Amino acid sequence: MAYAPGVALLAALVAGCSAGSGAGDAGADSKPGSPTVTSAPPGKYRTLPQSCRAVPRPTLKDLLPGAEDLPEEQQERLYAGTPAVTYDNDRKVGCRWKSEAPDASRNLSVDFERVVSYDPSVSDDDRAREVFAKQQDTALPQMAGRDGATPSGSSSTGSSTTPATGTDGDGSPDDLLPRLLDSLGDAAFLDDALTRAGSTAQHRTVSVVFRTSNVIVTVRYTEQPARVTEVPDSEELQDKAQALARKLSETLSE
Image: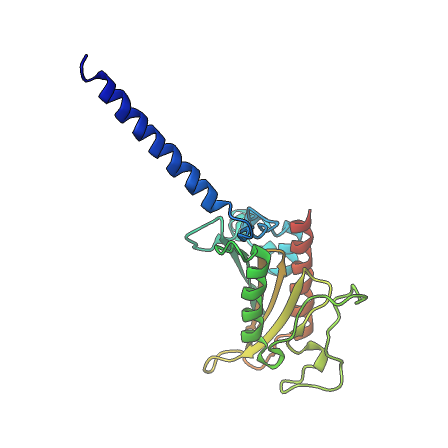
């Protein structure tokens, strides 16, 4: 009992020090004029669609001629598509389809990427805009630095920003050249590449890439004719690839 007053005094001192320290910390955090850190808003999209179900069956039938001639079981496998290998289905998904017809083979791929900014001062949309710009500059270096966003008052027909004034090296008119696209997502571009590997037939790949908020969608549509002398029709492939891209954009917006 002789030590009780000493113990009580020690406890009081400890409690006083603890209280004083906490008050001091709180005061340091709330100094007048201290900047307030506000996190950038998240992107509109938190999930991605099921890529192999993103393209309607009638559209697949149109894009993959020759598939309807296959036995029903093979048709189902073809239309079901093959999922792309990804390591994070919340960030990237994709699907692939291929059809073989007597006159040509066709390949279709659809990829979705959900961009997330890990910098609290940069929004998901702004980060997606940066990623999209790099893709655009790589595909269309002649338009590097140009904003693919839809201008106000633009046509909703998806017409080219490049006027038709002639033809390019493989005979395609200027309005079929790689270009920015109007009225598709927040920004979009189209690339058209005609290549030949060795002595095989030329194959043409049309890519349509667009951004909607923090999601970037890529549609690739390829045709390789059976005959070496034939050249895939650019206008047909571009029209069909753009039509699919617009369907996907509408689906994302729902």
